[in-house]
Image 1: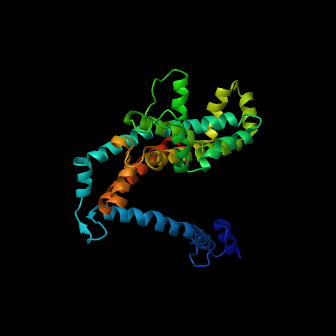
Image 2 (image 1 turned 135 degrees about the vertical axis):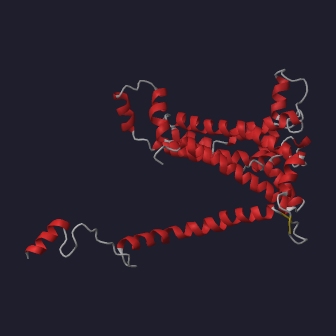
Image 3 (image 1 turned 30 degrees about the horizontal axis):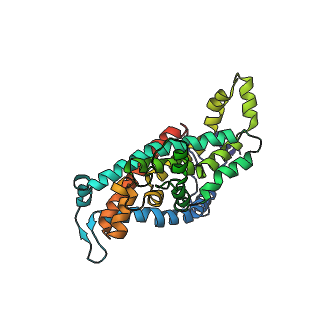
Length: 322
C-alpha cells in the first residue's frame, strides 16, 4: 500500500514507473486519430476537386508545353523549343506581354484602390445599400455584353455619343477613332475596365467594413484618434487585411487574364494588335491554329506569373502570425 501511494504520488498514476512518460495509444479508435480521420474526411471533397480541376490541368499543361501537338498528328516531344520560340522569334508574343503588363500595371492597382475607396465612402453614407446596389449592379453583366453599350458611346463616327458631345462643345473638329486608332484602344479599354471593377472586390470590401465592431472606433477615440484618416490608417485598414489580400489577388488575376473586353471593344485581332494580350495570343494558337503545345507554353507562363505575383501579394497583405 505504501509502495503504491509513493508511486502514484510521483507520477500521478498508480502502477506506472516513476520518471517515465506513459506512451499514448495509437489504436484506430484512439480519440486523436479519430479526430484526424474526420478532418481528412471533411477535406477530401476539396482535395479531390482541387486535384481534378487545378493540379492535373497544370501538370498536363506543363507536359503539353514540352511537345509539338496539333490534335491531328501524334504528340512529339521537343523539350523547351516552344519557350525558346516564344522569347526569341515571336514578336507578337512580346507585344502581347507588353500590352498585358501596361494594362495590368494601370488597371489592376487603380481598380483595387477604387473598389476599396468607394466601399469605404459608401459604408459611411445613410442609404448605403442603395448606393451599393447601384455600384455593384453593372458587374453582374459580362464585359462582352457591356461592350455593346460602350461601343455606342465610343463609336468612331460622329454618331457616337462621346464624339457628338465633344464636337458640339467645340473640343473636336472631327470624330476620334476610339476603337480603330491604336493610340486610343488600350486607353479606352483601361477606362472601361476601371468602371467595371466595382464588382466582387467592391462587395467584399463593403462586407469587411460592415464587420468592423464600432467599439474599436470608440476605443480609438479614447486612445487619441481624432480624424477619419487616422481611423482609416490605424483601425480600418488593419481590420480588413484579409479582404484586401483577396481583392488584390483577384485584381491581379483579372488584369493578367484580360481578353473578353479587348475582343468586345477592339475585335480580334485588334488594329495593329494594339489590344493583343497574352490570353488572346494563347486563344489564337489554341483554338484558331490548333497548336496546343505552343498554346500550353503560353498558359504555363501565365500560371507561373500569377503564382509568383500571388506569393508577393500574400507577403504584403498577410499578417506576421498568419
